[in-house]
Figure 1 (tube, rainbow, N blue to C red):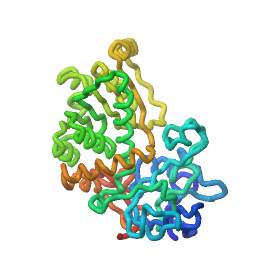
Figure 2: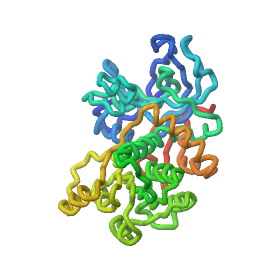
Figure 3: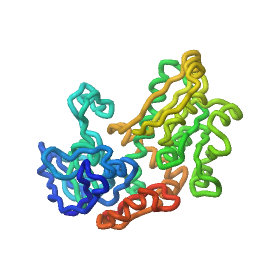
Length: 368
């Protein structure tokens, strides 16, 4: 079968390869599910792996099949699978259990292992291929009513986890009734964070850098959120003008904004960090003021990365909620499709900035 793979450690090595076709028998205990891949989204992680910044092939393999933002349709199931059937639409989780206590209880996204296993990222092949096989335990069924946007589920889970964790931390307060939120960054994760916060009833201000008129501003305003351009009004300026935020969700990919987010928090506020920044950027900050504000204001900062099954299932519920509340909004994020695995060059060209106003670049691997 065809797949898009990289040679880890070699820059710009993304290419089409012929890979062995998997079988349901590859998964022990009769729990295997063979999936025909329909769509796979690509993001900064795929770009960075192709840039040889990180990523490892499975042991003994010459390449790593890319792709973690998956969506497909079941073709066959093993004899031990009762919860899925051929024809069902599914999304698979990405990180797989390791050896820590957290892995053992199904929270592998909180693992303390130094070595972790993530499909399409580290030591496990991904989903940018004609087919894949996985255990049904790692799959979430997608209702037909949201199949058009199923490829957005994996990035949505990062948002779901971050917001759930914010509320989990603040259970210590016995009563926490946040009303105002800021989202820093208006890419895919920032847009999805704005959506989920609006579904939770928050008043949301989302900060971006693209001047109006633009597609992102229109999408945000369709949710009833406010769009603020950071070159006109900084995050601290907006917080001083409009009031501090109970929850700040940082999704900009620009680490200095973390400190702006810290300074914009209200008392008892939570700052959720979702950006993975691997650079060496340095900034000067008002450390005493920020520290004092956090201590005296009972503020919290927490990170969100990857997600376990709980957040995939929550994401499906919110997708369904979004389709009824804001019909067609999620579909509008799917801006730049690339037809077929042979379009690997076009896929990475669009991912690397060759597509104007791109929100989500994805590969249309096959039709349902």
